[in-house]
Image 1 (cartoon, rainbow, N blue to C red):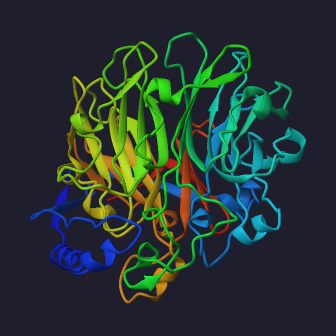
Image 2 (image 1 turned 60 degrees about the vertical axis):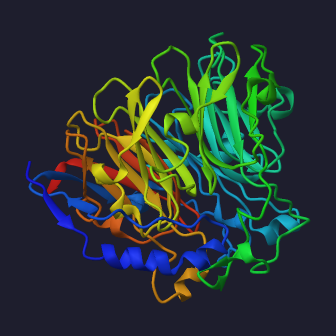
Length: 493
């Protein structure tokens, strides 16, 4: 493998721009970013095959379009666009569920938007089965999670929403039933991320739900009306800073179709009121017990160590996963976990806001992580973009996990600025070099990744049962993308 290390020609300009914008950024709803360290480099993929990701959406029969307000005057209008892969009928082929959300104007009138479930037809096409499936509870949808909460062998869906989440029980016949009220898992706040995991080892998956800000449609923050409603001198939506955090929930599975909310007694209620976006369960120290990691926007991240007695302890700061290496709080969004360096331990990647690099926390064992974002090569290429969904995934079938992320700004108004990444943004692809580093293949994997869009959700899976991992992207403005992995059709970087 031949790789060329390229000194970033814009590194000093980026640092100067970052320093010049400190005053303006301090007035916004996001933390002030740190400049790149001296000597930071980007490694462009060179002399190696790069799998091609082809946008085949137009041929799949997927016609879903996310509802959107082009002005995005309220923060809740910028945060939807989730996508879930689920083999709901257990035919061995992944199906796709897209979340949806109305505009604030629609919601004020009592109108809601409906998500969509697409059945995999096994021939490269999908059929909209939303109405037939019973996934018809309309909400201000964000994201969600999949898990068999009642141990009947069928995967169920939990959708996160503003004002009340939805648990759909899979009936095993191609239909779902809304069992939220019976299960007791509505939450009722502005929920964003969710994940199923059996934290107490009783054989039933529990449910962790993270919430964002305390947001009410009958008490809307005025567009551009406060210091935290500015971005680089222009008026934008307010938040998250300047708004109250909403707290988090942990629902313990009672084993009878119901759950009990135990976040306070378990120590995961988010007493600090941080702005939760992403959450995952993972056994980070190979104890046999799943821990919880939460990506918070503009505030420190949580790593909750499972103590094995029904309680958790936040070790984010001690473990090195709460902030960046220089101690900066970042506007964190998406989380990826994976053993990218073949150590037998799960490491973490976290996506962040514009001018903030994506983070790679290498798991050193014994609850210690080292932030290697710049040395690994994933940091510098990410700086211009607002990054969201992400995943560790082996796209070239070489046995080593690669890293992919989608992006798109939250403020349409940034297109009026003389410089910056713009509202619509490309995607990032880092290929694993098998030595703890990654090379940047974002411009080499086909035109789809370079296409500028406003993306949010990302899910990976072998949609076509051809042995290649494919990518599904949820956009908040417009249609999704189905990216077929043509691993056998490669370009040489």
